[in-house]
Length: 69
Length: 69
DNA sequence: CTGTGACTTATAGTCCGTA
DNA sequence: ATACGGACTATAAGTCACA
Image 1 (cartoon, chains in turn cyan, orange, purple, yellow):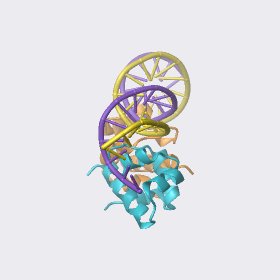
Image 2 (tube, helix red, strand yellow):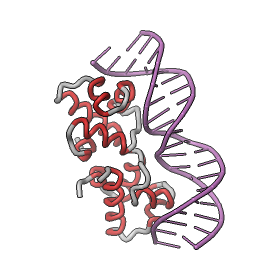
Image 3 (cartoon, chains in turn red, brown, green, cyan):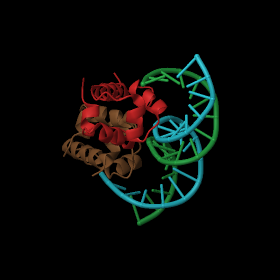
């Protein structure tokens, strides 16, 4: 499993746990909903900057997004 | 501290622990030495793909590279 | 609400040299 | 052994219309 798949699933899981829509999380993270969709499904290969913004929006340390599953 | 600074320091620490030069780790990771230099010093904003390759070369889970310090 | 494809612009990442 | 810079090329970021 590629790292970007793992991160995508972690993001999706945390987002759902917080009952946020992709649109809401995207706004909070200052990325587009369509881009977030691609990240969650592992189709995009985000940079650390994007990971950091999403982590902040989810109120977790970036470590959580990279966590083994 | 930005995520890319944290990751850079983690990489440098692990690389030194393994007594590898930047050149050696760069070759193993299939990135350029000059680029790795920039990553270690936090000047570059690598993608997950690169993080994954470096982690593999260092024989750690990518999680280790994102670990809080 | 979420995913896809197509697209442009920004920057990730290479390669050269040099110190 | 590492870092810096310039010039390049590959690909990520970011946006949109639509299903």
